[in-house]
Image 1: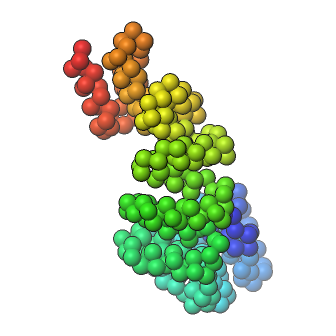
Image 2 (image 1 turned 135 degrees about the vertical axis):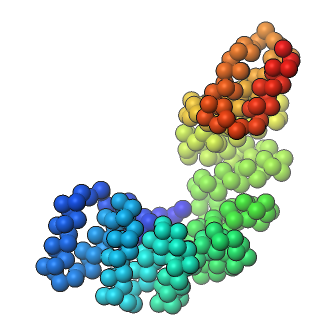
Image 3 (image 1 turned 180 degrees about the horizontal axis):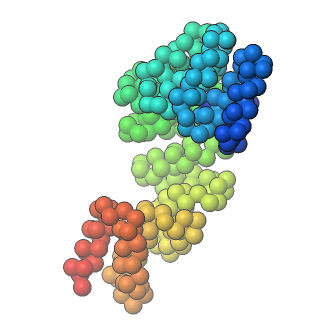
Length: 298
């Protein structure tokens, strides 16, 4: 997502701007508040401290005090809404975002957050409306477009998702998540040349992206370039040795080669790799299926 200016950060982003505070720091801030006669700055700092420490009730208490002092500040209600989200009180969070919108009708952040909540609640139709509303207000903002694209993507509306990913890339050609997700859609549609190009672009920007290495390996595999597939899967595992899908993919392609050229592959290495996956995820059905196939062939 695009970075926002520091003054527009939400509680979600701002809580990361503060280091972890101990109890003495919190006590000191409380004394400062008493001396300063209810300073909103100190309430804000204390609120973020408790938010960072996941003390949501305390964080909520301080931000509600800010709302009493600054009832016309839309940012305060964004922060309160975020805390309610962390407490899984989605309806309360939504009401706070709606209140923020009443104070600032073109508040893109509030519109997107309402869309996020509607999506979490399964109201996809109205979530789409919220994201499109945000796009209508700020057509060059990639965040609502990415929210809309991923919603389409998750619900197998690949044409619509691809259109939005392409729009994002036009605005920001270096948006790696949009490039990657669009590459996966190209792969599903059988457009392997475009998929490969997207994954390679992602890897130029993020050389340590194990998912992109894995999916590039899948492109090579499905186009029968097995040596490049093995090399690329191996590169993915250099980045992330525990990458479950890559470990399976590498074992699977090696077993295919073993069936044609038994002398070229050590079967025990394949079995060991598959068992390594099962240690981390005993419910991986693809791995069990391949292991049973190997066992029955011996």
